[in-house]
Image 1 (cartoon, rainbow, N blue to C red):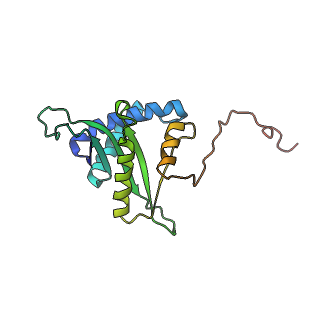
Image 2 (image 1 turned 45 degrees about the vertical axis):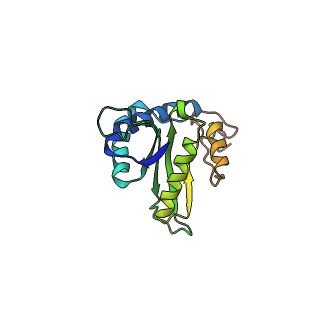
Image 3 (image 1 turned 135 degrees about the vertical axis):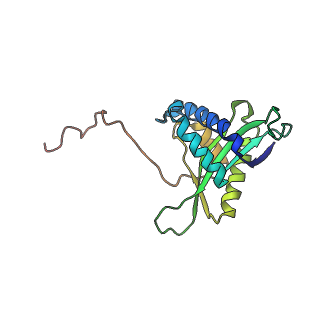
Length: 173
């Protein structure tokens, strides 16, 4: 396997892979619509390519994607950024935004290699800490990030507004 910067010719495959990722995340409670966001994510992926903030994993035996029609061996990708924030912090933070490995290549170290390469790229850009989000109900992903040394730093909670609670409707009583 080889990890390399994504190229302009990868944008459509990246958008397709992101749609697959978003669709899979629905099973873990994500509210993100997959196919409905394809055009927006295609534009985002093009931006990541230009900013050199997207890496792809390809099988080592794949062609170099020179347009000759051969198999480019795309098996996964990672996108990342340096947080601009606006707040003064005591550490420069980078964010891994998306990490995806095609189903047939999972469990072979592709995700770990992509994550490590993104961490190295962020470190080269002056980042002190790397953060990412993972859905609470995605146990497999949480276990993966735990093995990679990530620890909970912030917890986000949500509820539906139509859910009854002990205090709902009892205000002013």
